[in-house]
Amino acid sequence: MNFQPLGKRVLIKRVEETKTTSSGIIIPDNAKEKPLMGEVIAVSKEINDISSGDKIMFSKYGGTEIKLDNDEYLVLNIDDILGILK
Image (cartoon, rainbow, N blue to C red):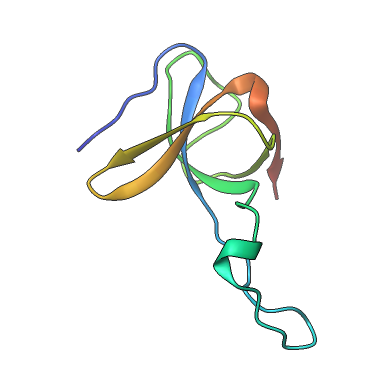
């Protein structure tokens, strides 16, 4: 299923962080916060400075979670994006 964000929004997929600490302690899923990093999947036509495939950091409480083809995504307003990881 294709999803084209409207307005000044982007569709992202969260990037999971490592589940163990540097000393080898495993962090259970219920103790972890959701990651604040993601990969851009689709961009509205109104946005020129971000493109599909970019890795971004976004604000903790931004966006709307949606499910497409049994995968979870996040639709973010451009103002919720903090920066692009390079």
